[in-house]
Length: 564
Image (cartoon, rainbow, N blue to C red; front, side, top):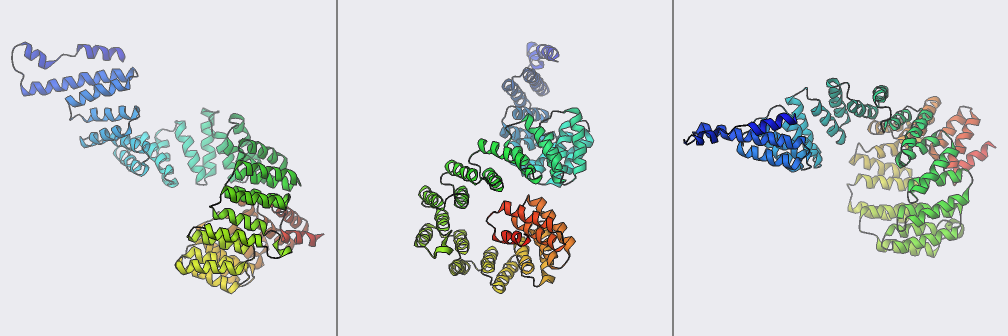
């Protein structure tokens, strides 16, 4: 090809020059032909430069060709393609649109325009161009593949599946399409189809990065946790620094109830990311579960040192230090947090709650009030801040102050549905169930599809063992909106328990545990159902698992004590 281009470029004659050599002025037709000849010479030289790897030279030559023949749609299209290769999407977009305007109708100009827009972050516009490219040429596999990618990025997963299946029909041997479609099928819950596609990919490219982790994810979704763990382990053999997959492996070990392997993974993760709150939580939970309180406290101290001024991480670390270590040290750390974030009202809330931790034994403390006063002084004039402070007042049994804070917020925003729901939470904690019900109904009147409000009201009825005919439909409406929410499934299980449908309740609660990865209250509910079924030993196991996750739970301790 290179040799042919060299011959063509060198040998191409100039019609206008030949005419002038005979001493005659060129005719208009001859001038037009000369322009086309010149355009072709520059175009061929541009191709030669492109094949030689000189993109700048190629763009320069094809630009000259386009200047000589500005009606050439194919020249505009080539400039669009070269500009995209050179990393200049704005020029690629301009030339692609000029090619379309000049009559390029194969869809290639639309495909390049879409690719340029996608690289500029304008994905919705890109998607429109890809759709038009696929309409212009339904056999263009690149257009369908690009459309599938764009739809996936826009979270149109069903649409992505349609496009990628079309691309796969057109090119069934292409591994990239099968690989991408496998991920989409897995996200849609079509796990068998995803697994089959991965088999095909693995036959062609057995060491392709990501296959093992995708298989692990599929096994996880199917509840095959041992298979998931093996897949994640294989991935980590290839990519030991992949923290995200190591987290998944850690959670899988927890589901397999393999504390030794979970602990080893958690320690490795904590060393890699000492300031990661989620990892610290898991590691501390494992230490507490194994009765290693000193190690739990040491992990909390490490987290504190790695996250100065960070409220959420600081609050968690301080709570652990207070629970498993020293109350005095916890108070010292809480006050240090207020120095690190003196203008953040949340730091003062943490300090107030830490000083209030043993208030019930000693009575109200002036130190608690002083810190709450400072929280109110520096808090912003916002609803979210008022809600946060009201929640804190509720946690420290200052219910009247919580009510006043929320009443003030509702006076400013009476049409705020989530705020009415927050009021319902506070009223429920005060055991004012009729008032809590009224507030929740107000929240639902403002937002009928608020899944959290639907679940709250349904669970309120179930927990109080009242209006059970309303409880189940409310919770099922919440699950229609958020079908995989383990806490809504727990509410349904608890409602079925109240209705005396024990086996149905057990099935729902076990599903809730699988989805949540473990939760103290769900373990407690399942324990109560198993106890009602006469399976006392299994009930005890559930109470013990709940207590491992929340060693401070008085309710779980009482349940276990009753079985001794």
